[in-house]
Every structure is written in structure tokens, then in C-alpha cells.
Image (cartoon, rainbow, N blue to C red; front, side):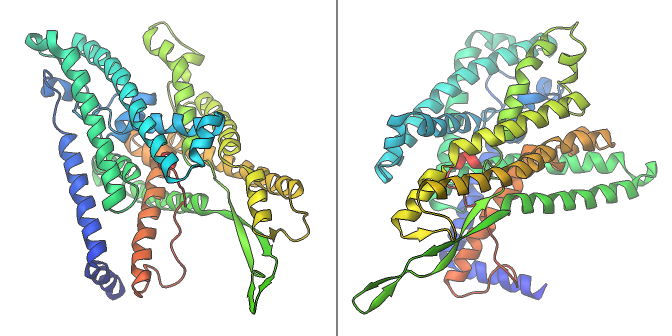
Length: 445
């Protein structure tokens, strides 16, 4: 405890770090305040009667927005349109030669790609806002959520307000990245997810209260949740270290190179993207199940994430997308060329194409168990619900929410530890150093 208090004092004593933390907390407070401001023309009392009934991709958006989607808030779409645009632009930099060239231009190319991402975000937001208006109008037929006197202006005002809200959230994320602590986009998503944790925790505690005689079951659930979090940390940080030697060079009286280093190949290079892609793909057939009251069997089964068929199909899709996305973002040929240019080589492997083939074979071997573990983490919420955990609390036992929370917290702690070590303070841990995901893209989350 004394060590912990001293670490907090060290963090607060660094003026730059203190400023970053306070700025980040201010931006987060503004975001959470905006998440409770209801759209013009909406009766908040009627919206609160619907509860948290969304599943599939709608449930994912609501989780990322901290419940703002169900509350018809001005931040109802949250940061998701920007995430969608970022994913699309990242794929373009891999598939389209023009964007590949732009990415290699350095800072100027990165600014151009970011500008295109912002333009695309506006387009995606307008489309999603129009769809959200349709969703709200459907809710109005059930409970009269839209005020009758405002119905004529509702479409235009809602699209404008939601677009402005998403752009403001995107701006806050960029400001947190520049002046705050951590990746702003990832932090905003994490805060939205964590905002639902207290209510979910209380619901689970109420269901497993002493009066029901299940308090011991609740304690076991918390212990399992902690074990799952530790497993996710291992999955996110797991790497295969490939030894790399650098040839010695003598220039004048000085010797360069000759060092032995390691090339870290991540077990889960794709991050959380395969889970997001899988949820989006599975959501497509569920549209027919949601609108067809007579739908049954297979279509109805895959609308329930605790169903065995859903888990099986979801696992296969996640494993497939893990290999696909890893192949898109990981280029063994480029790594082999960089090693060759820097006089580096893997012991026992010839430079050039043999090195690329060797790195590719290792990546295939470690991606397979990583994909299986990622699929298992993705279906854990369904398994938890089948074991008796309430639906809301089960989402924290795995899936997108848990992976994002663990990854963002690790990245943020790594930045704080770096600031401490730069000023000759002790790190956050007595032994070892905290390692983040070491990602360069915001969409990795």
C-alpha cells in the first residue's frame, strides 16, 4: 500500500503527466454528460421504458456508446462511424496502390489519409443517422417516443444533431490523443463500455443476493471473471521472439552492429477486429429473423448469442477473419527486406525470400492457436449466460468489450510508466515492465 501511494505521488509530481491526466478526465466528463442529453423531439420517459433490449450489432453500438444509443442521446452513434471509416481506410491502404503510396509518404501521407477518413466519417454518420431515425420512428409506433408536434422536423434535426455529435466525439478523441493520455478513440470506447459495468454488477448482485442463497455463486463468478481478464492479458501481450543478428561493420575506429536482438511476432496480430467483423457478418441474416415473425430454426437460433449454433458459426467466422486480417496487415516480405537493408539476418536462414517464407510459416503457426483463443473469448459471454449469469453482466466475461478494456488499460498504463521511467522514477511494478499492444492504428482499439 505504501508503494502504491508513493507511485501516485510520483505521478502527480510530474507536471506534464498531471496535465495530461486532468485534460483526459475533463474530456471524458464532457463525453459522459453529452451521452445523457436527449435528442430534440424525443420524450425521454418513453425511451426509458424500452430498456436495454438491443442485441447483435445494435447492442454492440449501444455498448460502445455507453447506453447513449438506447437513450436517444445526441451522442447515440458515438465513435462507431469514425471506427467504420478508419477500418475502411486501413483496408484501402492495403488493397489500393494509390493509398499504399500515400501511406509511405510519411507524415504528409498520414495527414491526407486522416483527412479522407474524416470526410468518409461524415458520409457514414449521415447514413447511420438516417437509419437511426427509422429505428426511432419504429419505436414511436410502439410507445410514442417522438413528440407528435415535432414529427415534421424530426428527420432533419436528428440527422444534423447526430452528425455534429459524432464529429464532436471524434474531435475529442483526437484532442485526447494529442494533449491527453492514451489513444483518444480507444479511451472513449472503453469509457462507454465501463459506464454500463456498475448497473450490470448491481443487477447480478441482486440476482445472486443472500436472500436467494446464491452469494457464493456470485463470488465464484467474480473469481472466474478475474481469471478471464488475466487470460486476455496473456492473449494480447503474447509474442513469439524470433532471434535476429546484425552483421558487424567497422567505420574508422568505431564498430557498428553485431548485436543480437529479437523480432516479436504477436500471437494475436489482428487484435479485436475479427470479433467486430464476425458480429457484423452474423448480423446480416438476423435482420430477416427480426422482421419475420414466423422465422424459426436456424435464423432464430443465430439471434441468440447463447445458442450452440450461434457459438459454432461465430467461432468459425472469427477464426477465418483472424487469418484474413492478419494476412492483410502483416507483410513478411517487407520485414525480410527491412532486415536485409539493415544487415540483419535470422540465424540459419538465408536473407531475402527464404527469410520471408520462414517468418510467414512461423506467423501461420502462432496465428492458429491465437485465432482459436480469440474465438473462445468471443463466445465466453454466451457460455456465461448459459451458466446463469445475467445478460448484461455476461458481456463483461469476454467478447469485444473485455478485449478492448484490457487492451486500452494496458496501453494507458504503459504510457504512464514510460513517463515515470523517463524521469528516473520506479515503474508501476516492482518486477518487469508493462507492455501495451504496441499498435499504430486507432482502429486496433
